[in-house]
Amino acid sequence: MKTKRSGNDHIRKRYLLRHLLPATVWLTAVGAVVWLFYQRSERFEIVGIAQGQVREVATSSTGRIRSISVNLFEPVYAGQTLAVVDMLLDNEQTLEAELRAQLAVAAAEAERLASLLIPTQDQLETDVAGLKIDRADNERRFAADVENMRLRILELQATTAFDRGTLDDLGVEVKILEDLRSKEAIAPYEVDKARIQYKTLESKVQENEQLLQQAREDLRKAEERRDRFAQQGLPEPSVDHALEAIRKEITVQEELMKGLLAQLEALESRRSVALTSPIDGVVIAVHGRANDALQQRPGEQVVRRAGEVVPAGEPILVVAETEPTEIVAYVSESQLPLLKDQMTVKLVKAREPAQIAESQVLRIGPVIELMPQRLWVNPNVPQWGRPVLIGIPPGLSVVSGEIVGISGL
Image 1: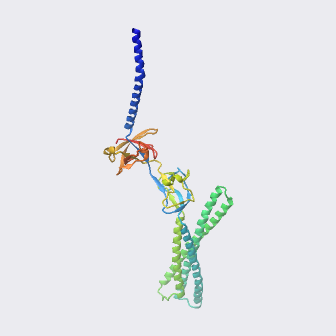
Image 2 (image 1 turned 90 degrees about the vertical axis):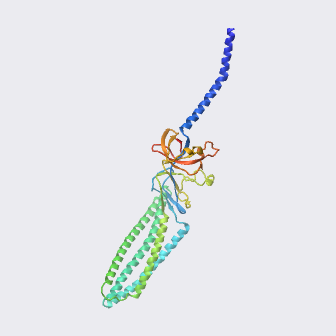
Image 3 (image 1 turned 135 degrees about the horizontal axis):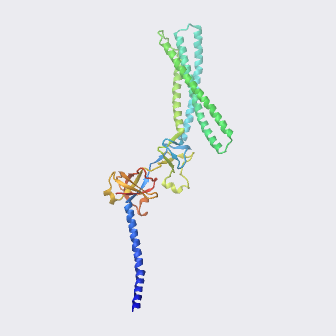
């Protein structure tokens, strides 16, 4: 009898182990999952994305990239030159050629006036040799000196303008040859020859600029002599009519050349436009339009290259802040009653090393918006929320685009 009872107890224990143990394990697992979800919900209530400033560097008109001095992911500082762009359009290059042609015509006209002035001066000298020097003769001589100086200035301005244009072209040629030599595409003497031409013309331009400065000083002195003579209390006979006519024509050529030089300088200033970094940061990839993404080959639109033509407003480079300054998060409609401006929240960084820091809500968006897909609980179910900006406190180490947990709402 006792043996039979022991057998029944053994069968009962086996039954309990077979049926109750799996149920106990399952209930324990469910409890652990519930506890984990509870701990996660206690850890943070919403999540946000760390972000910093991202600035596009572009031009206001179409241009061709002449050079880019930075590479992808290279640190840059505010004000650093990133690229040089030639913003002269094809039709403007034709205009530049026309302006240079007009400048040549103006220079030729100045030479013609100078040739007309020589016989006039010769006649004045003949008159002075045969007649007693009087006020009229002196006045004509002083006036002739002034007009000679003005013509000399016109000639030097024309020569300097042409030489400056040629010097700029030689400078570009030297850079191109130096780049080819660095690639061992040409012999070194080609670069040396171009450098000698550049230095020779540069010396000539500097010499002409010094002569131009001296001519202006001589003109000032000649005008002072003429003015001092005019202030003397002697009868003032009329100036020679031929000299007066030449003087007026010289004035016309001066104004014409001044306008042509101003237009050429304006065009030259657009030939090499330096683009600088607006902020301290790092160069990041230039992303094309969304509709063009499927047509791009791998690696395209990462960074622009020299020689590319970039339309107006299209980014040539993009600079992002090294460290983010704020976090954008989205608050669901059920949490809106708890949301307040400048309220204190707790930031939780999930990745190692884990960090927790306090911050404040800086600004609250005015409307409910569609959240970024990264913040959706279910990637197939869109979610909406009211955006808020939260400052990143010092010491919290996050990178732009990182997900950060937020609690305290």
